[in-house]
Image (cartoon, rainbow, N blue to C red; front, top):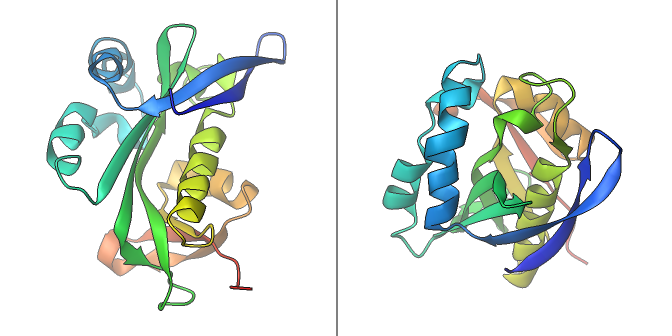
Length: 181
């Protein structure tokens, strides 16, 4: 475990302990055996993502880090970040942590299940990316390209939204930016 966090159990609005840890074989098994069948039957934009393949391809590189949120014995969220090769689109001289992929379990998405089982899973992962940015000396800068169903989430998180990026299939770019002090 890297960090203990709190997520919200929707059924009773209680804060529940969860852990953020490095992505493990158990998390990938949860994705393959539990998440994937549910996502394939949904209209979620990320239903084609294959986290096992992502782990194999990206995490072999020292530029990437992968994390999972676990609660009550099940993987509730996954995130892959690039910590070395991205720069702010607001101030290009500054490096940032780039969130390559972020997903919550199907049962935690109100578009798939109402009410979701847990809330705040994506928020705690995104906040963890921001903490990594501070640890790396990037001043809390975090950037990402958003799927259309996630645009309002990133706006609510206080990220600055940009236009669609033609180099990324028109996906809108978002960034947590703050001036250097």
